[in-house]
Length: 618
Image (cartoon, rainbow, N blue to C red; front, side, top):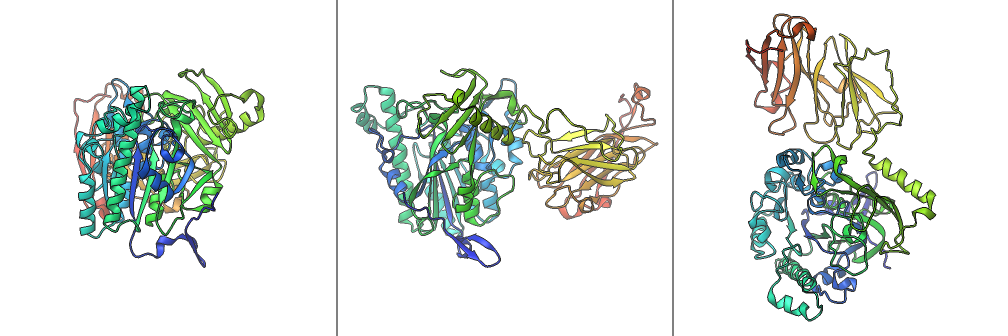
């Protein structure tokens, strides 16, 4: 096998930098995503029937990872991972549809708050076009594309799904416009192919009817070649407009398909090779030497990281993927993790409720823990040596107990939905004789990895305290670290938020006896480890009639990373809830932020709306 060439230059004192850092123009980026296509179903992979001449040529011009995987073998979760660089249990889309009675908007609102490749590129000056599959509503508002086919429903919209089936013109018009504006571009080409309905042109269907007696397979084979034709058209357009040299082309499947090469285990929405295995290609003429990497692991989480790195855009720390053009990062990766869920999902922050399997690929070994009965598969632990048994025919878990234990440990260290992230049994860390008050203890999982990142306690009238867990994104020393950010305030009813979606706590809204509402701002970027870096906003609103604030809530409605309003209820008189029963509240406080972002750290510029509720009762 050829030596893989990852184009890096070393600058003294700065370490390794991508070679594009010296180029005047940012590279264009084209991402091509096949929809429901099995790993082996290409001409260059030796398929005996399917012909893919254009993708065969792209392979000859690319760095190809043959050990490529998607972390979840289902359209929506897989595509969402390519946008965010996160596992489905992190970005919230574990399935295609909400369960009956759930609102898809809950997932969309959460997804919008995450770092996403299109938005990060557009903020760096790129024009970004979405075409094809998309499950999150509006690609521009939710993911930061600058151009799209408009709002989508399931799969996409009629206009977005027409691209690649009935026309390629929207892509060509977009490229022409980007060239006219002299801006770098991102084209997201995720056509509804070869996904069902399998409705290929008659000329292609007739071609494959002669090669198989199964008309269903003939239709699928024809759909694969039809996709290949449109890829060839797009690549030819780049050549015709002198865009080849400064354009990165990446290719990947979103998941597998059961009509692929015979004998392989699995299908779409399964953790087996026929479901999760994919080729991943990267073409960048003059920067990456074409070759096949048959040793190192790659996955769909790497798509946004590689694109951002190539464009010179900082990669958010929360992204789990690696830069596939970084030789050291590729070689250092030991494992790729996989997770399988039910088709329908219950809530973006409750991935474990629909979890059906977890797994890991490390070197030649693959271990899968199955929790729910699947087609031809009972719940249990499955271990395969993929080098010796690529079709996963023989479960050897019983003969390799140490390997099973090792790989299970790796899976649980990655994500253990049945654990808090603490060593069982739970251990209470008593900090400075703090007074623990059940009314003011609040845990949180800011980075949504299923583990608590921090807890908050009220220690009496003088101290407001964070306790951070090293397993989360607190970046603190083990076992836990106490961070007091405010004194002289009684924060009984508080709210905490990660407003900019970076996985770290940014803001604390506080309400307390006789004092009123306050905000504590985190540093930028926030890490909550340095108390001195946190800023006290000052008093935004005072309590009235010796009342105190209840259930303070901070909200960032326009998602610009700073709060827009603080809302709280104010109760007159005593703290005792028993004594307050049946008594009227003093009202609702709505504290409105000033329009200018830079003014929001000045409490004098906030506007307090005091709304009396004389008939409200506790």
